[in-house]
Amino acid sequence: MVDSAYRTRSLGVAAEGIPDQYADGEAARVWQLYIGDTRSRTAEYKAWLLGLLRQHGCQRVLDVACGTGVDSIMLVEEGFSVTSMDASDRMLKYALKERWNRWHEPAFDKWVIEEANWMTLDRDVPQPPGGGFDAVICLGNSFAHLPDCKGCVPPGKNIYYMSDLTKDITTLVLTVNNKAHMVTLDYTVQVSGASQDGSPGMSKFRLSYYPHCLAPFTELLQAAFGGKCQHSILGDFKPYKPGQSYVPCYFSHVIKRTD
Image (cartoon, rainbow, N blue to C red; front, side, top):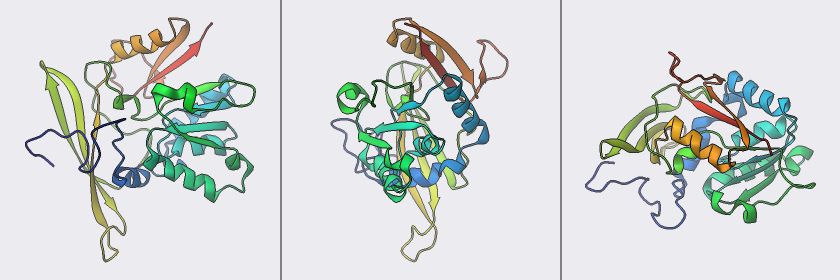
């Protein structure tokens, strides 16, 4: 996938308008297989998220970048009232399919799914009865699709989900003035029945991410609340302290509004 032009997304994905790197359908289709269903979420991740929401008495949850809906499905199954949104209709169709297949279950019949983007959430997402949400979640690689800060991300393991389909991930790092400006990943994933004869085949797609740094990103989140918030940072779901010897693979930010 290397040529004279640096492409940030798979061939066939439009480069104009609201950027949807999943618009060709290939990445969305394989992503569903790659991350699996709720059973593929690690026990550590699931216990952390459910425990956090219940600790704060949250019931109405907005998943602002639900993708194929794997986290939303987990929350619906656990009894939460969930509204899910994503800017990619190709990703949302898997969430919509799951809701349709399980419409006879009251919790799934009430599951709200909307196509929306973060710039127009107030117009795109309906408020739940009673007004407002108890919690807003944004998980996985969602924030990295929004260029905002500069820096680099640590290499690491996958503690969110377990997949045995990945055959290769080639990493390209675009630097500007000797600083990492964009990270592009070329995925090669084995998909059963992808070949014409029904045998397993290889699917390839490209996604690009912005390498957010911890400190500037922390400032960005706190500024969004005007400083009126309680903010804690976790590294691999454990309390994180700057300068600690263990370097986490994933950071999680938990913010509670105080006004």
